Image (cartoon, rainbow, N blue to C red; front, top):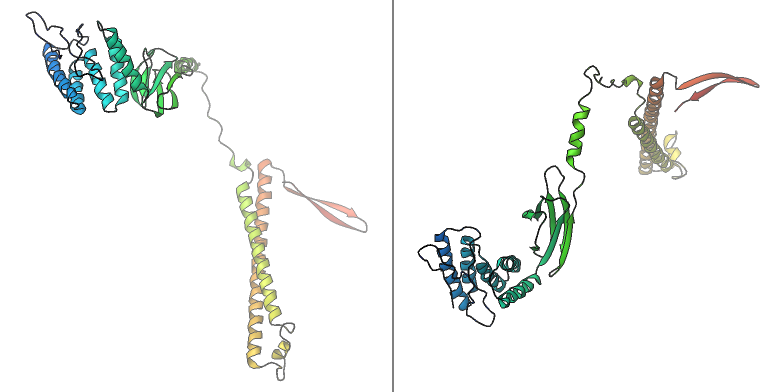
Length: 360
C-alpha cells in the first residue's frame, strides 16, 4: 500500500511519507510519522507526500531514474527518515552508492516506531552500499574544528558518525581559528574502513602572546641601524678571479692549438715533406715545377699567419693572466691593509738575489 498525508481539522496527520521497498515485493511498507524535525510548513509536507507517491509508482514499474528524481525532490522539501530510506534504495539501483549510504544511515539514526524487520533491511542496504565505497572515521585533536574531505565540509569535530567517500586518493583536512590546518592524504580501496587522526601543531596564539612583550622596550633604547659594509675592506671577488683564470687558460689552450697547426703547415712546406721545396726560393732554376712551388708557398704562408696568430693569443693570455693576478693581489692588500706581495733581499754564495713572498 502507499501512504500519503491526510489533513485533519487541527494539523497534518502522521500517516506516512515513505517506506523501504523490499527487493522481492512491490508493496510499500508504511511507517508512522513521528514528527517533522525541520519544522517544514504544512504545504511542503503535502507537496512532499504527493511527489513521494509519484516516486513509489515509478519504483513499482522499475523506472528508477524517475523514482530517484521524485524521492530527491520530496527529500528537499521534507527531510524525513521514510523518504531517506526510499531515496537510498533508488540510489542503490542507479549505482550511487555513496549517496545511498548517507541516506540509509540517516534512516537508521532517525527512524522511530519502525519494525525490527525494517531496520534489518536498512542495515542490509547500508552494508551493500559500503562494499562499493570507503568509510572514514575522522578524529581531530581539537573540538570545534571544521572537517573537510577534498575541500567539502563534512561536519565539526568531534564527528559523531562515519564519513562515506568514493574510493581513491582523498585529502582530509581540519581547520580551526588560530591554528595551521591539519591535513592528511589517504588512499582508500573499495569497501575499506579507516580511522584518520588530524593533529594540530603549536597554537598560533602563543606567538601572538610573545609579540606584545617584545614591543615593551624602553623608548630610550633605540635600535641603531647596522653599519654599512665597507666596500674598500672587502676582499677580491672570487667570481672575477675564477673567470679571469678560466679565460686565461682558454686563451693559452687556443694559442697552443694554433701553434700546432702552424708547425704542421710549416712542415708541409719544408724539404722534409716536399724534397726540393727550398729550391723554389733560391736563385737558379727550381727543382720543382711551378704548381708544386705554389703549393709549398701556400703552406709556408699559412704557417706564417698561424705563428703570428698564436703569438698574439699568447700575448693576450699573458695580459689577462697578469691582470687577474694583479686584481687578486691588490684586493688582498685592500682587505686588511697588508701588502699581498713582499720582497726581501737575500745573499747567496757566490751572489745575491730577491725573495718574493705572495699571500693568497
